[in-house]
Amino acid sequence: MTTGKLEFAILGAGAIGSIIGAHLARSGQTVTMLARGRRAQEIEQQGLRIRGLVEFTQRVSVLTDVSTFEGADVLIVATKTHGTEASLAPLKGARIGTALSIQNGLMKNGLLAAAWGTERVLGALANTSGEQLSTGETLFTRNEQLCIGELAGGVSARARRIAAAIDESGVRADAVADIESLEWSKFASWAALMVLSVTTRSVTWKYLVDPDAALVLARIVREVATLALAHRITLSDQSPLPVASIVRSSEAEAVAIIQAFGHRMKASAPGHRMSTLQDLEAGRALEIEETLGHAVRMAMQANVPSPLLGCCYALTAGIDRIRRQRPHSPLEKV
Image (cartoon, rainbow, N blue to C red; front, side, top):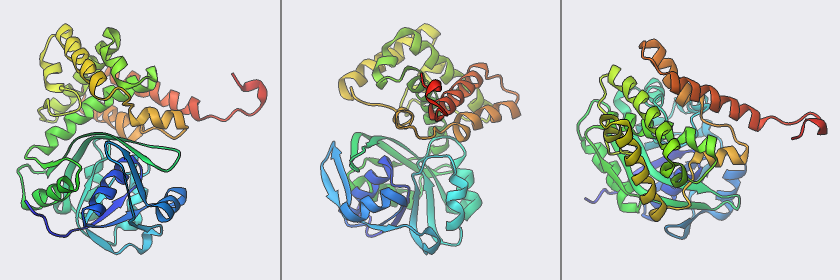
């Protein structure tokens, strides 16, 4: 399918936003990166520099004053989840044909709908990985699939067109009929992987193959699955982890499934680290409240027991605060 020209705006120039923006611009699409601070200066001066799976540098337009943003055919939100509502506020007057978010968590579509109306929002998720390096380069590590679909279900012409533009640029993408199921499935995977990445501080495959870590992963996935069921959502194996298989198997079988997945990741992406771990090691704030916190609050409202998820939420929130605290005197340094 040939897509023709689309006008893309990408809010957030971290790893995934940079990867998508660079590929789209290189393929001839019109792209504006909405960025600020040091990252905006890097892109203005040096372009988007991608290495890893591919290596190229792409010049692209950068807009630092988002209050002057007039609009685009497609807005892709690729920022971290904290502060999303505040980040969207200056853009609400902009002309947006379609908005989609590849952020983590389950809040994102509601925030976009509040800004531009549900009819202008597509669901989306990115099973794609990268890492923003201190040099300003973006390391592209996994190119699996970016899924786009209508919130009400089904595959529309606009979803096909946007997915095709991204796919033709070199970032694998598809229009899908069951985006809500896939978004929940990704969150079940992400929540479990995020917790283990923060607590083990390890590359991903190592805790996937460990039997005790895999057991914790399986139990977190199952709690999220219970919450999904309360919202009449059926989970899928089409996610970073095969969550449907993990849920319907015995606990021992689920551990074996996760370990097998870990061995495959060791072979295919041995250096993969969750973006949460990257943020932790860089001293950046973690995505806690809008992801795990939101899920825990949803579980409480639905009267769905989630003791492990609640403990993990409290633990990761504590780790986040402690890690980012600045000692007031040398005596406080450990």
